[in-house]
Amino acid sequence: MAVLTKIRSYSVLLLVVVGLALVAFVIGDFFAHGPIRTQRIYIGEVAGKKITIQEFEQGVNEQIEGWQMQTGTAQVDPSTAFQIRQQVWNSMTREILLTYEMENLGIQVSSAELFHFIQGPTPHPVIVRNFTNPADGSFDPQMVMNFLANLDQIDPATQEQWLSVERFIKRDRMEAKYHNLVRSGYFMPTALLEREFHDRNTTVSGRFLFKPYDAIADDQITISDSELRRFFNQNKNRFEQEATANIRFVSFPIVASNEDRLALEQEVRDLMGEFATTTDVAGFINANSDERFNPAFLSAGRMTPDLEGALFNAPVGTMHGPFEENNAITVAKVADVQFRPDSMSARHILISHIGSQAGGGERTIDAARTLADSLLTVVRQNPGAFSQLAMLFSNDPSAQANMGDLGWFMADQMVPEFSEAVIQAPTNSFTTAETQFGIHVIQVT
Image (cartoon, rainbow, N blue to C red; front, side):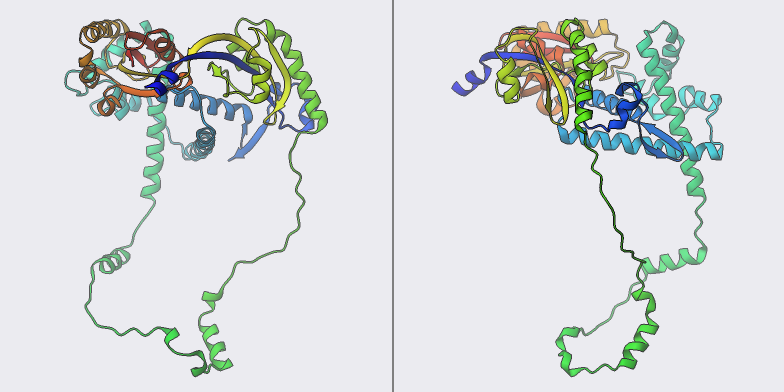
């Protein structure tokens, strides 16, 4: 109990904004053409199409944001970040290659086809999955009709999501046509089919005697040169080797020169004035830094010794840097100081709605709020019913296994709105929070 009390105890945490972390892994020639962030730096070429670092990083950032929304985790560990970058690169190269092949083959999806897969008798699976009757879980075509009839009245974000769905369906159908063409191009002759059938189904029974070669001593066997030559001539295919070559090469490691570092440090210094006075810290960092804004508060021991010594007891607004760390020129700023718990535990019931990341069928946000308020009233009167209600009403898939119990977590492991609600509520109390996933009914445990 003493350990739990210590974990729950409050300690000072800093919102240390590590801003302007401009990567120092650059080549001097980059500076010969102006500021780094205005250049088109190509990192690859696939089927004649060049891929810029900006396109790649945008794809990585979008995937990271999607991962954060899906997992409810603000921090991305290095292993996950590496996997995401690999997935984005593979996805980009695959899309370019498929697009190149489909354009050459003239593969298209007409408006009539798109209509069929949205409003036809056999809609696309993504339509079926998103327009189901909440009463019985069956696909409801009338929901599709109602949604499209009111599409121009829906908020722009939802309209853009719908256009993304249409693009996904169109792309999926084009790829299906391409793969069908490839499959149709294969032909298996009847003779080969018969042979494969017999190879798979013919069985024999027999008896055999096995004597390994090493059971016979080498000095008991004499092999002549003519026998070796004859065996080689009869089995030349077994001794074929690919051509090899001896090469010499020089390696030039791509590292920043002293001139590069000085130029990059000056670029950071030029931004420090605006960084010190801006009221939109997150927007400024996302626009200028190679690392996105991280809203997490950091306690003692979770910063580097240099940062902790310079900023942990410093007032809000204190700047530190520029300094070089992890191959980047960095400036840090204390944006806020608060007394917050080191870790928290809670359980929740997630009520999703139309437009939330967790989906929500036909439920509007007002209906979600009403249901959440009703559940909040019930659990306040009968806390013992929380687990059962989580299994019945929560749209968090994990609720069926953990009954809504999230266990212990740190603030940066959840989306900010959820963590903030837990921090502000006393232990054993109930509250609600609205996030991109929906409305959460929360008990702080």
